[in-house]
Image (cartoon, rainbow, N blue to C red; front, side, top):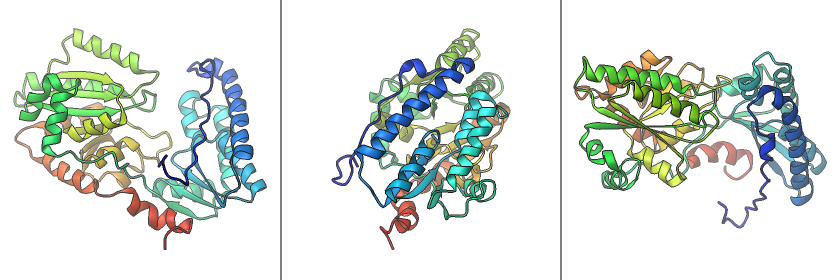
Length: 374
C-alpha cells in the first residue's frame, strides 16, 4: 500500500515517554498534556499538510482528540466524515480509571455527541452497530464492516510448516516433537494490558499439566508461545517462573517473544491452536488476533463471555469458547486428547474461514459507499 501512487503517508511523532504512565494520579496530569500535544500535531497535519478531499475516514478509538479535530476539519474543508468504529474510547479508558470515573463519563458523552456529525459509520460488529443506533442515537447510515485478515496471514503448507518449526529459534528445540504430535504448539498474542487476564491461561495450563501427569498420561506436552509487548509482560513472566519453580508446569513450556509480522504470521500458521484472552471492554468489539488466526487457518480457543463472540467464531466449527480457567483447561484436555478428533474438525473449519478476505468484505460495503464499486 505504501508504494501506491495515490497513497501519501504523513507520520505523527510519538508522544514523549514522560507522558506515558500507568499511575492513575500522574495520568490525571499527563493525560491532558498528551491530549494538547496531539491536538496540535493532528491539527497541523490535517489543516495545513493535507489537501481537501471528498472523504475522511477516521478509526475510533482513539477518540480524544481525534473525533473533535476530524469533525472540525471536515466542516471547514467541506469533507464527508466516516467513522470506523472498532471499539469505544470511553470503555478503553474505563479499564484504567474505572467505569464510574467522571472522565470516563465525559468521554462517553463526547463520543456520543461527535459521532452524530459523521456522514456514515462502519461498525466492526453488528452488535456495535446496534449500540451506535440505540445508545448513541446515530441516525446516519451505520454499516457493519467485519475485520478480515491481511494477505500476510495465510495457511502454511506441510513442508513450509516443518521448515519454520525447524529453523525458528522459538520452536527448533521442540520441532521434531511438534511434527510427530508428541508436543502441541499453542500461540497467543497480547499487548499485556488489563483487558486480557493471562492468569486464566496460567491456571488452565497448571490444571492441564497436572492431569497429563496424573490421570491422563496420553495428553501431549505443550509449547505455549505468547507474543507481544506491554506493561504487564514482566509481571506474568515472574508468575511463570514462580510456577515453574514449584513444578506446576512440568508438561508445559511457556515462551514470550516480540516477533516481526512475517514471523508472527508463520508462527500462527504452524500452531495447532490459537488462544485469545480478549475480554472486550465494550462487549461489542472483536479481537483482531482471532481474525489473524483464522487467516492462518488456525483453530481458536477464546474467552467468549461478550456479545459479539458469535459474529466471529462458530462454536464447534472453527473454534471453542470458555469463560473461566476450569472450562479452558477442560477444553484443552479434550482437544489435545489423541483419541479425540475434534481439533481436526476445528482446523478444517478454520481453513474454510481463512478464505474470507478483505476484498469480499470491503468492496460491497465500503467500496459502494465511497463510489468505488457497484
